[in-house]
Length: 237
Image (cartoon, rainbow, N blue to C red; front, top):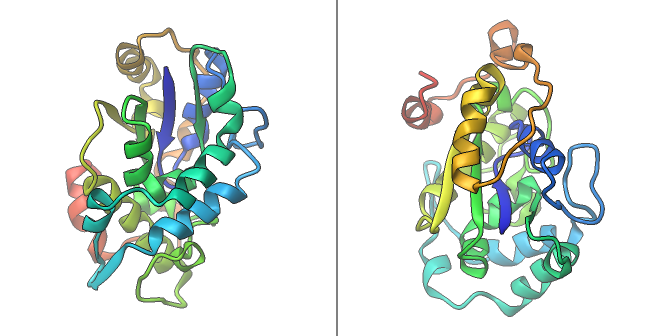
């Protein structure tokens, strides 16, 4: 079974990656402190290859239709397979990887690995944008958008883009959506859902309730109107 975590950086994806690893899932040959599979340069470049076919329509809306119709770019596939070489060549039955940038190429990852198990990891954007991440400026990965010098807004746009690209992708056969907040505040029930989805027992890890709702004591701007619809849909408003 192949498992991958789809979720924006600074979204708490480390928690599920650690859970999978401590549950015996092989997460790649070399991991960093966030349990990302590294080195990741090939996946970063794959992001730039795929983003060539994304069209920005303005007003925080993108057109992803080409990604679902055209052949997957051979350069993209080569880069992804290079990045995942340790995962793809292992004999371990349950394997997978976690890297937040995978979310930027989700449509073509699904097409390359249609039978994989996809865990969509979501966090309240008001918390997610409080800290920096490599995907804060989408332009670094070739994604078109209206650039702003407002760092918090850039992070919010990144959150929005990654939510939109997931929603625009036809769902694969095996997919589940998990909120970080539910994992932290009700880990046992959330693990039950994940165990039913994956069909394997999962380890319980230490969590920190104070990581939920940090925006409540934040003095900066942490809410933007263009996030409202998704926040309502996800139960954050």
